[in-house]
Image 1: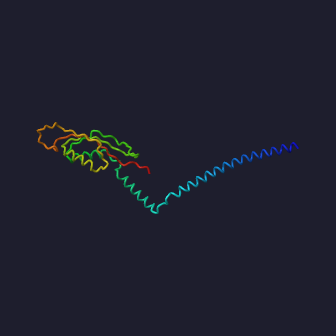
Image 2: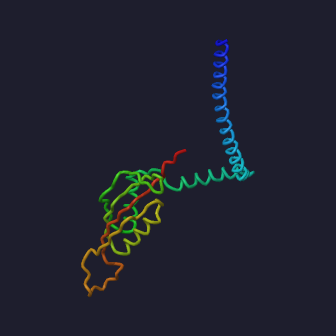
Image 3: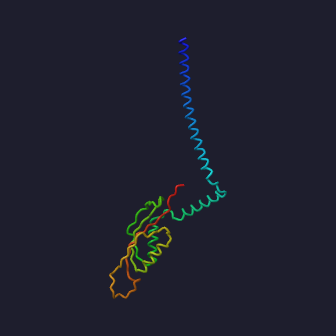
Length: 190
């Protein structure tokens, strides 16, 4: 009889243990299901707020790709440094300005608005009349290389000017130091 009592106690204890394990697991899963159901409801509400895809989405994407290609090609590809210097010297010669490249730097990369652009910098010493120099600078800024930027310009009179000079101010000799930067086409990640 003692054996039966002991067996019943062990079986009842084992049943309580199993019930406890499965019962707590069931309660935990029920809480998880309730939480997931609320997340599903929230996601469904957010999904309902998203507007449907426009019917002309492919046309819009094609237009955006075309626009991107146009923007990419707006900047010149990496140009040949000696060609750039020769172009600047030809412009100077065409305006009657004597120009000498003093310092050229190799192509470097410069970050602008999180886009990496290749940049070529050159320093030019130029001499001529004020009118010639003004014409030279104007031609540089509106010339073939649309991404040429005149970063710094220092102009000094070549000779001391006396108050008795009768020359027009446009004909007075000047010397200039020009810091020029030419930007190239950035490398876009496709």
